[in-house]
Amino acid sequence: MVSNNQYQRVAPFIVFILALFLLFNLVKPMITIILGSILLAYISFPIYKKIIKKIHHESISIILSLLIIAIIVLIPFAFLTFGIAQQLFYFYNSLSNNLEKGALFGYSCTDADSKVCLILNQAEKFSLEQLSRFGFDEKIHKFLPILEERITDFILTLPFIIGGIFITLIMTFFILKDWQNILKKLVDLLPMRTKTINKIILEFKDISHTVIFAQLFVALIQGIIAIIGFYIFGVPFPLILGIVLAFCSLIPFIGTAIIWGPASLYLILMGYFSHDYWALSKGIALFFYGFLIISTIDNFLLARIVQVKGNVSPIITMVGVIGGASMFGLIGIFIGPILLPLLLTYFETFKERFV
Image (cartoon, rainbow, N blue to C red; front, side):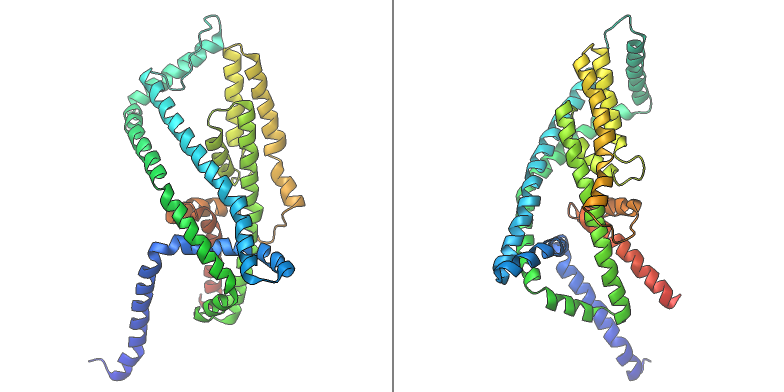
């Protein structure tokens, strides 16, 4: 039988686990909004501190700082969202039409005297045969309705996304208004020594600064510059390619060249085969634009604008972006790369203390 002393020792832990379980289930539907509010409050805080020094009114300072963030982030995000949806529909129609015509790339070279042209057509034929041989053509045909359904679902959920953004802004307002008490209560609740908590808070400051400004901000700027270049030089699906390029910029060494390299080669080949020397020159110009501007702007930003404070590998950031997006949705792009190195720091602290 269990004695009263044993029961008194075990009972609080059972109650604690049950309370933790109930708390998790209560906040689970709102976890993305809560984390997004915390992140937005952290990003808005420097702006809020500067404004409150000038107007000396807390609520107005918070509202103005959130308005500035909304103008900088939310309005471009809205245009970007609608643009991506439009290009995804175009991509769907283009891919389905090409497959109906028996073409993979949607381009056929007609210059009978060109050996390069012959190689291109053979490559197109070979690609289609290989797709058919391994059953990929059937998978692509099955994928197209799924893609159409996902695009439609995304558009239908836009009102809920807008509502979630509105709730996030309200929560951010109250976090900024009472941030000192919230931080104190959070620190008091953590079952750790003060030294460990201070170390994690310091790591959070360095990691969040490095991830948000020295990596994600730079990746965002590279993506925007790439989108502008893709529009100017006439690359298909510039928004989609620009976003993919922003993710690829987190890959060391090759990074952005994974996207702008093939894009410039595509324009060069299309211009050469169609004898369109203007398109050919645009492909060459895009190559130098990617090599001299897109690939080097990160060095300029890191040297002149952003000061790196923490040592976070771009690979860890990339894993955090992908894992965060799959776990928390769109906001996870920013939460994941901060949360992952923080967890690694916690495990390192745990190892130093207990192992």
